Image (cartoon, rainbow, N blue to C red; front, side):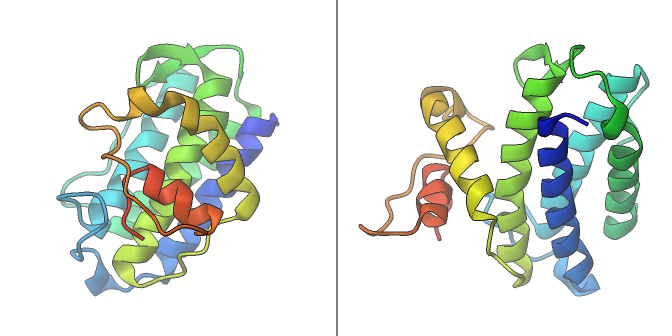
Length: 181
């Protein structure tokens, strides 16, 4: 398994712990992403996984249905990731945010970073554990800083939020991505 694949599986596992800890009444709670609920965060991450695994296997994605139970939809996505990612060909191109991109880049950098941020989003929405892995935060922050202009496009990340001087790295990272911590 590649380092990038291992990184994404680690992020998906951490996300899963927040999904499983949420209560059934939490899914309609507002998330830090403007206009999103906790369910929207879970559905977004799940559908990213379905799109990725479909791209890796040459199949059609099976997104979370509007009437599907939130946890059941997520469980399907995690099962798909665990079935496909460990043996995936990292040299192939898969659909990415800017068209076809190398699987290793989509998995190891983009999806890992996106999932990391959404771990926090979901935890904040449902009152869960907001702590993120410090090493993952440092890696993701170093990787996303050079993409500042690109990530400010509509539908990607919001404008940076100022954080207090001396804030920890997680707060700086989340603020850079438009989150109010």
